[in-house]
Length: 474
Ligand SMILES: [Zn+2]
Image 1 (cartoon, rainbow, N blue to C red):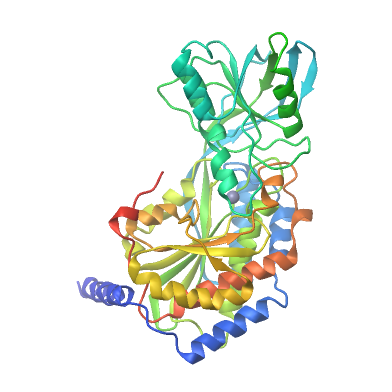
Image 2 (image 1 turned 180 degrees about the horizontal axis):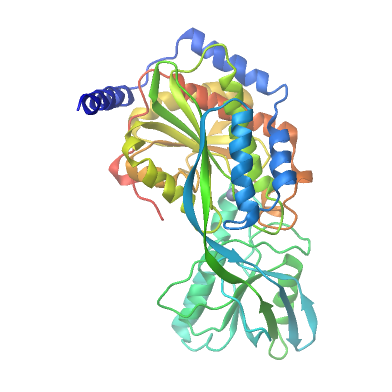
């Protein structure tokens, strides 16, 4: 009973802290943030952490042996770098395996196709799936066509040719990714037997991009694969005729029984308000084709190194910094759901969260998903980030793993990295350590620790998300 009362008192005082409007930082706090920020620009250990995860563990698709090795690696590493309360929290993950895959054009000519199965997808019969190809651009184009000609896709392989635009912001990906996520569902609705997409990426090499698809349980689950960009170009030309274009492809992917994985957590305990939490997220799993250096060993390296540097500061920040390395971001988000479930009772004391999941290039924009009471804090934070060349944006997106925290009203902060190069390699066999730029990572560490120290030090809080923003797509 006594304990229950003290827990209650703790919760009430924490709530008061988080609800008070942000006050100005003390001069001492500001100076120590600026010093830590500038020191990170001289070189950090982030690239070493990325190299270790990428080279010594490698690919770590949820449910695989690599995934289990990554959990052990993370527990060991977070302890090694001096974080506290390091532990893993079990989550059950789906286990999907790729298997062998191949494809070719069979008419009007014979041409090999370089393709890869979309994650979560079903396989084809061993002899493959062959059908005439119906080329459309986007999901919107397919829906418009089926409106006019409801039988247009029946019995066919629908090929989505939409191209992703290379942009510094992540928007190019957001615009193109529906063909991968929803293409199989929309094609199945029209009676198609299979789906091909132009890879959602910006490379011109003969390397395809995988990534998750989602089926609708009420519709047939049809096999789906992504073509490398030059192979997509070939289908674009051949589909213009003359004569019908036919393709055959074989996908050996399959579902295995569910497996155990884990979120891995480590903290820098706060000095005066340890019950209030600032969350720094990244994801530990990766796709199977590369070694997940950019996606997301880079994010793991950035947030872990930021926390390591903060743990070594002469004076600890007021609030607790919590590094969360999420399981299974790529193929089901079980880690994100598991965290939300396991920490429900303390989500009201999560004062801010961010997530790093966009590779190795520097943060150039930041934004807030928060209520009007956080505005003063965002302005103060902007001043601390601006010497790093970071300006404010208003995209309102922070990260896939922390999105669920919105439901509990946690204010989210986006630290947006330059995405210009990222989608040349994202979800491909080319996502390997040679693409990592240590200098870019150092700048990301500087931005992340600036955010983290500010959020952990600022008097008052960022308030809570307004009801209208407490929705998530998951
Ligand atoms: Zn990622």
